[in-house]
Image 1: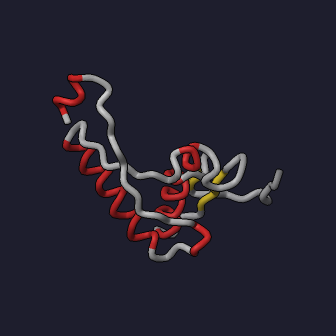
Image 2: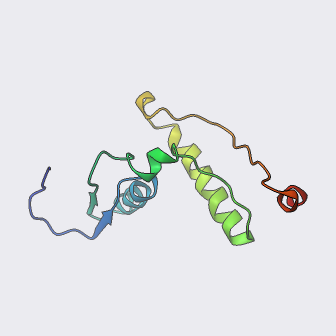
Length: 105
C-alpha cells in the first residue's frame, strides 16, 4: 500500500475508475488540489468490468442528455490518451428478452 505525505486537499475522490478520474481531472483543471484514492490499479474495478463502456441511455431526456455528453467528453479525451489506454470505439447490441421489450425496440 502506498501512502502520500499528509496534505490539505480541496477535494478527495474515492475511486479511481472512469467516473472518479473524470471528477479528479475536472477539479484539477479548475485549479483545485485533488487526492484520488483507489485501493487497486486505476480503472481496475467497475470500469474494467464494464470495459470503460460509456452507453447513451434514453430512459429519460435528462439521462439521454447526460450520457450523450459523457460519451462526447470521453471521445474528446481519447485524443490525448496514450496507446496503452486501449481506447476503442465499439457498439452495443441490445437483445429483447420478451415480446414487450421487442415492441419497445
